[in-house]
Image (tube, rainbow, N blue to C red):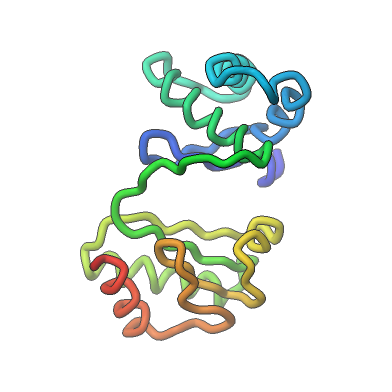
Length: 165
């Protein structure tokens, strides 16, 4: 299985890796583009569950998240699931500087006891969606705060304090 075969989606506030999600969306797109959310969710659950464990008690939450991803895939507007705390994205191919930035952000968030998530985006296609032209890049709560450098921890702390309010 290649790393690109797994996509992370947010289900009830948690990031969950889903195997073959993009393939399933490509397969159903021609037939389900104009169907109801319920039909889309049901079909996606059926297909996704062949390679992924979906607890029966969480099927409804998975269906909602999968429909949201399908709509995004189809270029339709979607309402994102709310994230509590800070959302920090480190963009970069996985070089030493990118890993250092991720570790620094993680350490500062831990020191500050700030709740949130840190996501390292290393797929070049995904990085391109953010419109940054250098690596590593740091995005905090959807705001690009650093591109092309590894800022020191005091700057990271200041940005996190501003984002935390």
